[in-house]
Length: 295
Image 1: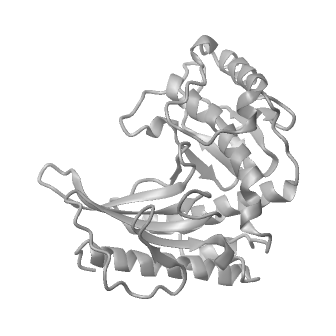
Image 2: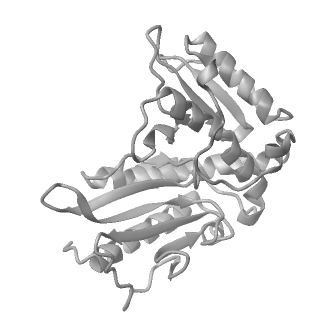
């Protein structure tokens, strides 16, 4: 992944107010829980809950869950944000079944998931929506159907995911210790964890994380973030350099954020990508200084 590739593949974000994306974000977030729970009940559980996470597949424009293994052929579930559709892929990454969530309820969607599990040879009785982490409540929790209204908002969110994946893959490939770029179904952020210093047991003791988050206490709109972690908890955020874009914050976490509204002020895809990359580069450099790591 090169800077030139990011620039040429960046999807121009429209000038729509990022705060108005909430209805689309909330429904996509709720919809991917079916994929996460399929991971919980049909994939070996990992201590970090990574069996429930998703990755962005650029060609398909989907958030795809981890592979579910089956003798007759592996398969996976995915969400296509731009039209709020669940998809089942076979081992050849062929979409064999689609389920648009528009005007469907959670109960109806769960039955579709179970039908696909049965088709692929799994015991559908194991599938439950017993979400083990807190997510924001939504009207679909009480039986209301999903509403695919204002399609442009869903298309815009697909662009946000695609662009963030480009930027984050660049840095994931720059650090050999980096995690893969993943979306976590709990907070629904698309992020990378990069441990930098390890103890004698090869456990990380200093790291930084970067990603794109959805509206939460840190921001009322989508935003990029950078934050650090030390086992000793001694990260001092003082005498911080001025960032080319975005700002430093101290609550609800210490780090830097770049709000989407600052990005969409630019009407050029190339300039939008530069704003994000300049923010991440400067923020990472400052974060390494905070961690006391030579560059």
